[in-house]
Length: 157
Image 1 (cartoon, rainbow, N blue to C red):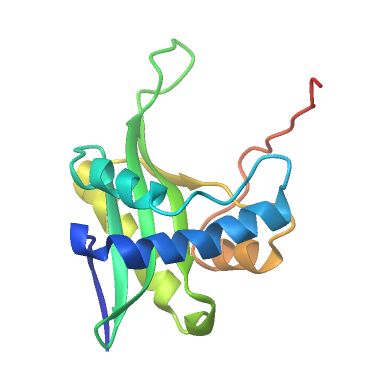
Image 2 (image 1 turned 90 degrees about the vertical axis):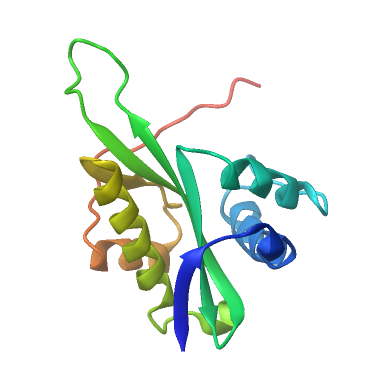
């Protein structure tokens, strides 16, 4: 049975392993920007997430085993005259361990994040996905996301 709940400090080692899976995707899709974290670094970051008023981490448990997480941040629009005074939630990271994908767990994590946004009074939900991650793009589109802006970059070195 699946359970979606807020992460706790005791989840740190499992979250560390899940981040490794996520980081491997980052290294695969954009090796110019991503490296694998050193062991223990993500566990330390979890403590700051858990103590924050503007971010949350949800975990998905399947029969008592944590198999995924969603890290969500709440943000208000920058105070520029051309921007509507809106707030949003931003999905920083979402991962379900590879052996448990395509069973609806990611959608349940996304729904928990959406509910968090509603409770915080956010106007919209935003995230990013690697352009080459076709399965990820399909997942987000199935869950109501659409392309609003494309990030472009140029190396300086």
